[in-house]
Image 1 (cartoon, rainbow, N blue to C red):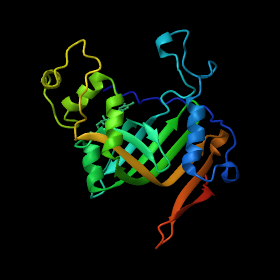
Image 2 (cartoon, protein in one colour):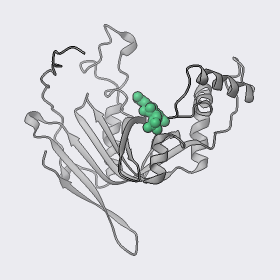
Image 3 (cartoon, rainbow, N blue to C red):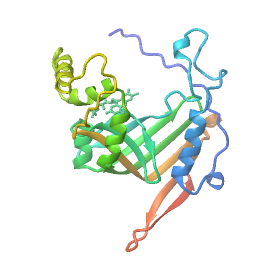
Image 4 (cartoon, rainbow, N blue to C red):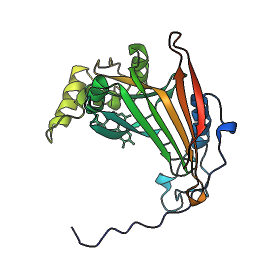
Amino acid sequence: MSATPLKIETHEQYESPPFGPSSVHPDPLRQFHEWFKVAQSPANPEQGGSSATNPTFAPRSRVREPEAMALATATATGIPSNRTVLLKEVDSTGFVFFTNYTSRKSVELLENPWAALNFYWRETHQQVRVVGKIEKLDAERSDQYYQSRPLNSRIGAWASPQSLVIGEEELAQRVKKVRERFGVTDDSETKDIARPEFWGGWRVVPQEIEFWSGKPSRLHDRVVYRRQTTAGTGESQWTIDRLAP
Ligand SMILES: Cc1cc2nc3c(=O)[nH]c(=O)nc-3n(C[C@H](O)[C@H](O)[C@H](O)COP(=O)(O)O)c2cc1C
């Protein structure tokens, strides 16, 4: 490696609409919904993504891939790991993604059922952080989502022993075997394949959600929701606070 130090360019100033505890929705999942809708709205051509120079990279939405989120997990002894996954559903209880249940992330979630999510939306200068307990999505909903995926993705789920060491040719051979097993040919686009039991959804049920809105001079707006659960009834309410940037 060259001895020249890596030069990190000076950062642009952040600027996004004012945001504070008095203007937010009392339910953080509804608040997330509102931010996500804006992030997913049609792209403003003034903002990022140069469609003139590379039309295939023209952003479809204001935020490119707003559903991409960092997912942090940890082993039972607290050793963390982190990777990107795609948010596929937000329901009234939490954030849902799909993966292999024998992957490293799933093994960690099975031994330590806490996870953290992070969405960074560079185009709108926003960040959403979630900390929560994890639960397995019920089989029916995992089936529904699995069946909505393109055929090759469904085959891929069967073929990949996600997170294990694999030989150079092994994946292609495994795909071939799965295709043979289910009688898939090049023109069987709608072939019905059952979801593998080792693949499905997880839901992160938030205990805490923070919305971060970038501001000039690092005086960002931060609003945190924390769940307070009443002992006995199990009912929960959200407290909402501003945090120092
Ligand atoms: C943009 C992006 C989206 C991804 N989405 C998923 C996903 O939804 N589910 C998944 O299992 N892996 C997804 N991956 C791959 C994961 O980041 C990771 O490589 C894989 O899940 C294995 O992680 P693990 O070994 O920590 O379990 C995605 C990667 C990227 C870069």
